[in-house]
Image (cartoon, rainbow, N blue to C red; front, top):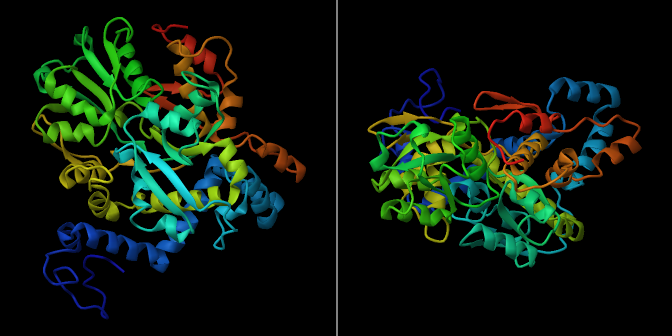
Length: 466
């Protein structure tokens, strides 16, 4: 049934206003709701039969799509072995290593009281909103989502087992697994938390310096060395002829401190996560130079993950976490929910941001600080598929800029961190040929990336350290 108007439905009164009769449309009704009402409305939507069916199908489809990125391969596999055998085989290659990830009846949980870390940015939307909407509780979990000051602290708390799972920058599980900047500890990406959702923001005084070739001597902030922000900023300026290690300065600044540093003149700009790009516009201290989706549409930013040890010791608990976060991602992907989600995650215990700022980020209708109102519905999205080719690209950038020395086994690392490593063995045991993996190609700034040829990709750049 339409949420708005259907003049051709003989069984439905034709009202030119919302259901409560006080607003011109259902959208205006949603906008007028308070925080608690927004939470309740989203909970009710999540319990509707059509959403529960959508969510179940979304979870299953997301997982299967990660395994079979080419639909023709999926169809051939299903026709060759039949549905039941296919489901058993597919279950063995999922991050949960169990059909429980998709089952309605949860297996007994090994651990129910959990701590999950997060940084207060919109990238963490699914992980955060699963808390007030009761998605963790519905899976039998007592989850404490813990706001954390910075990414180094997130890393340390995961290594020290103070957090059971966390909001990661998607390159972090790779770097921690490899022992880059920390003690090595195997980590896994369970889902991508968000795609797109970042921007390059510049101080207002640089309105006349939109060409990156004019940025020599600029000071930029990124949230962490092992971040898509750092890699995309380096990529962007290098494509415009600047050496990111010589022609500009790149500093690590926690996202909540970026706007204050821009205001104080400590930095000229940042490639950072939202909502802090939009917050700089809101506070009239910066403008949005470009959205990172203009560099790579559909790029990953943050991920939800945990250690290999936690998964091995708590497989059913991990499956329950997986279901809760993917259910939240399914809800966040629906445009009709975005304004209400902005209300739900805006309070102090979560993002502590003006609702108007979050609404602009999540709906994609936003002021850019240059006098324009732009409409980009997929400015931020919440596609959970952890493509292994994304991991390979991140590794190429780590090697390109000298974070990794020597030989890199790109495929082995990608499959170890972004999907579990014994997947193909299980399918082979069933007598079936395992798919090659989730390695779709893509383009970054118009340049094609072939995940099968990472070294050739690195060697194709004029500016690099390796």
